[in-house]
Every structure is written in structure tokens, then in C-alpha cells.
Length: 295
Ligand code: NAD
Image 1: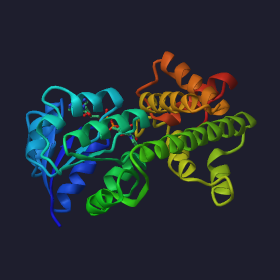
Image 2: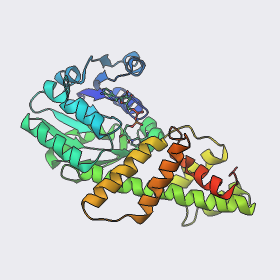
Image 3: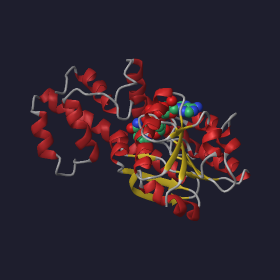
Image 4: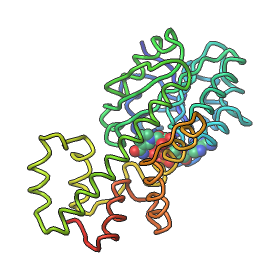
């Protein structure tokens, strides 16, 4: 079934996700603070909305793909926001990576207006967004999830309802621990190998089929060998995620020793002016410690 979808937040991830919805035949009403981002979507067939409110008024489903919790709160609850415009019975799908407490608060405020909400963050990076192969982890009521699952499949390859509101973003926090610690472990290994003087490309070929093989290794080793740190997932966004991981963990009494060290590594990279680089830039932290470059 083709739907009318409001899409707010057309950045690294939102733009290709919105383009895939257009390709699937849905009608799109788009909004972003950056006019150039909006223009790229209208050129592909979307209609521009002047505000989140207008995008919501004209849609049955509203998708938000924004940087962090404060942006989602402003766009959903703020003046000229989604809840000022959304029709009763419409469905708000927030696909941003935020904390479960903010997500649950938004779901409650939406429900007071007769609007259903799902949290449905994604993993797979820009490349997954472009190819429509994202892993989507959702939280919310089952019947609401079922009613929009085909739309989610237009952007992703695996779409799983994890539980009630907040469960999707919690799964995403867990996902970020695994991805970013993987990158850190890979970085330590690459720096060891580089300083020992072995051929990194040959080492990659030797180990990728074994237990060390991973999506992280496949995507990031070639990037590092090319010294290509264009994001992808920038350090700034992953720093935000690891902050969210630590806050959420501490609120429920979970110490995370490895994640807290990684958070400090991200802060060191930020202090070095590298926060706009891809998160595989973690390797530069280790390179500095060992005075060697992986190439
Ligand atoms: P981005 O910064 O590239 O894009 C965010 C967009 O939101 C920008 O175009 C910005 O102009 C827009 N925006 C901000 N405030 C707005 C407002 N008030 N009204 C309208 N538009 C507004 O971010 P991104 O990389 O696309 O990430 C979006 C979300 O997806 C984040 O929560 C991020 O953690 C998550 N995520 C990112 C990646 C990745 O690899 N980049 C992967 C998975 C998940």
C-alpha cells in the first residue's frame, strides 16, 4: 500500500532513506533546516513543507531522522512541531538514535494527542541507508508496528519489533557498544600489526574468514588502508551515542568499564579536532600512542 509520509531530517541517513521511500512509490512531504537537503528531495519528486507541523498535517505517517534527543524533542513537541499538526490516529516513527527515557516521554505526549509512536533506530550506516539494507530495531505496540512494517522494509533488510516503546532505542544503544568496541579492538590489532611490520592487507585476507571476521572489519579495514576517514558514521555522532549508553547504563545500575574507556578515547579524538571524521578514526588514537601509521 502506498502511503503519504512526512519525513523530517534529511542528513547523511535521512536523505537516502527518504529517496528509497520515493522509489518504493510513496508520496513524501519533507522538511529540513538545510534548504539544499530539501531541494535534493523535491528534485526527486517529494513536496517541501515549511515546518514539521505542516509535514505532519499532510501525512498519515511522520518519520523523524534527527541528530539527537534535543532535536527530536524540539521537532516533535516544539512550536510548529509534529504534534501541533499530526492528525489523530497518525503514526510517528522516530528513527533517530536517542535515549529510551526521551523516547518514552515522546510516546506518552504523542498518545495524549491520539498519535501513535514507534521508536525505530537503524544500524548499517550511510551505505546501508543508500542500499536500503538497514537493520531496523523497533519499539512500540505490535498492531502499530505491523501497520507500518512494509514502509520500514522499504528502507531496511531486517525489521524487528523488540518490545514496547523505548525498546528499539535501547537495542540501538547495545548495538553501538558492540560496533564501537569492535572498531577499538580492530584498531589495537592493526596498530600492533603495523608496528610489527607485517603486511596489513595480507593479514586482513588471512583473518577475515575466521572468528575475527566481522562487518566492522569488512567495512573499516579497506577505509583505513586508503586513509579515507570521510564519514559514514562520524565520531561526533558516536560520541553522542556512547554518552547516551553511559547515562542509560548508570541510571539502571550497570557499570560498563570498556564503554567508559572508549568514551574517553572519543573525547581525546574530539580534542584533537577529529570529531567530523568517521569513527574508524579511532585508529588514529592508537597510532599516536604507538607512533606508527597503519597503511
Ligand atoms: P545528520 O546530522 O547528517 O542529519 C541530521 C539532519 O537533521 C540534518 O540535515 C539537519 O539539518 C536536520 N535537522 C536538525 N534539526 C532539525 C530541525 N529542527 N528541523 C528540521 N531538520 C533538522 O545526521 P545523520 O548522520 O543522518 O544521523 C541521524 C540519526 O541517525 C542520528 O540519531 C544518528 O545517531 C543516527 N544514525 C547515524 C548513522 C550514520 O552512520 N551516520 C548510522 C545509524 C544511525
